[in-house]
Amino acid sequence: MAHLRAIAFYIGIYSMIVIIVLFSPLFIFTPHRWRYFYMTRWGRFAIWWLRITCRLDFRVEGREHIPRDTTCIIMANHQSAWETIVMQQLLPRHTWVLKRELLWLPFFGWGLALMFPIAIDRKGGKKALKQVIQQGIDRLKRGLWIVIFPEGTRLPPGSKHRYAIGGAMLAEKSGHPVLPVCHNAGEFWPKDNFTKRPGTITLVIGPAINPAGLRAKEINEQVEQWINTTYRRITSIEALRQSDQGKPV
Image (tube, rainbow, N blue to C red; front, side, top):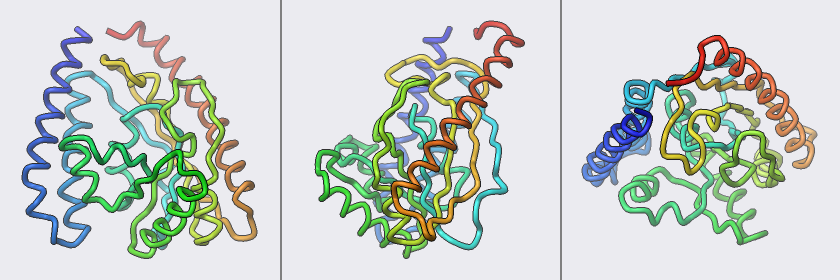
């Protein structure tokens, strides 16, 4: 059943991607907010379809921490494709720092290209860091939030990777606050796993970090500490829920 549910899910979302991208040329010369609204309809459908086909839902803590008077840099742990979809629906209009190869993907990458992403060569070193800072400041001035996954790649639950400095450096140079986000999506939608585990993903939005007077290293350390602490908490909560509900179907 898990495989059949996953097949139904992917048929639905890939069909929606094709439909969205086929009509996206109509929005090329429109204001970005129009494009953003149109392109993120796919994400709204994906979340609903995921609930219907795979019985996978989510809950959110900390909505009150989302600033309303400034653009922010979102720094989140990265375990799955799920978080890139759901944050479109939860947070103000934003774009992503991502590896440039994603823009080469048929249909999906073409849609991404319309969203003003900061597409970097992850092996670019200082050049990539400079690109994140320069283009990040530009996007923030345009009213867009920036989503950065400091681990750089999707990791299995419980795994750790050195946090890249780009997001924290952007906060230091721009003066814009960092909004830390933590979730346990990898326990339900694992990396490179076709099937999805039924249940409820927990996503937590933390208090914004004011970068004033902080160096990039200090910002990174605060974000990493908060994410690690929060992840340990929501993992234990979910484990208790699953033991109460029994084994997933």
